Amino acid sequence: MYMQVFWSVVLVIGALTFALRFSFIHLLEKVKMPQLLESALRFIPASVLAALVLPAILYSGDTLYLSPGNERLLAGTAAALVAWYSGSVLLTILTGMGSLWLLQAAFSI
Image (cartoon, rainbow, N blue to C red):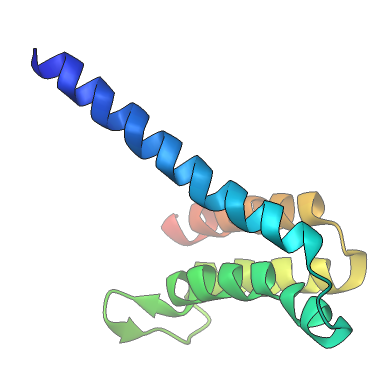
């Protein structure tokens, strides 16, 4: 009985989530947005990613950790430089993760 209720709730919530998102996609397809708004909306994914990643890079617990011993800061800097010069998302991720692993291994010795 409980499993039927559980899966019913999951399916209803999934259908409502789909309907809500699809409605905005369907409605915005018919509306012509101003060019300024369209160009501003293109920066949202990068802004959200920065808001998620930067606190993890800059803070250790509740303390701001800006020192040469911060492996995350060094790896993030390397990844930012690769992103700036190459523009490749895959190369940026590989550089960031690879340099973080190498730095963590070097600092743990």
